[in-house]
Length: 145
Image 1: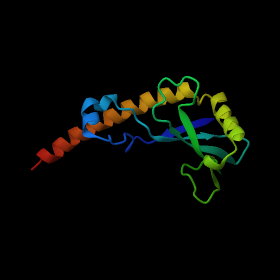
Image 2: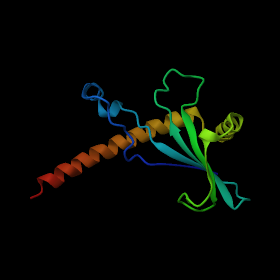
Image 3: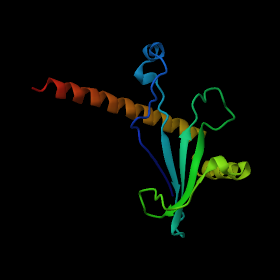
Image 4: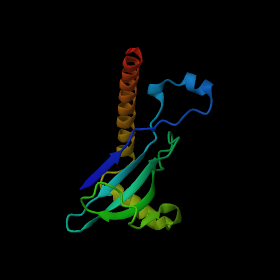
């Protein structure tokens, strides 16, 4: 079983300059959040949890992955929160061959570039929807006397 979780809060990075921000409408900005992928094997008491992030500017790079594994950890099955007391491996210090095997492991389970592209589209749409709702709520709040 595969579980993917993500949070859209603070997912659109601020623009470097005001001109770029004016040229790009909010619905054209791409969400670049960190997301979690958990692989559960029913026979085991723990699951493999990966902390993943999208690579910025992946357009036109057909051969490369559009997301990276940042951290990997074994967590108790059934726990919803990442326990800081469990050993977590930062992939910066991981052998490249093992890293490739982890990426292949995820791809074999459907977590690949196609999935990541669809997740980007979904999270961008959700963020935009929540942003509009926030502005409407803010307007109502400010108007209230």
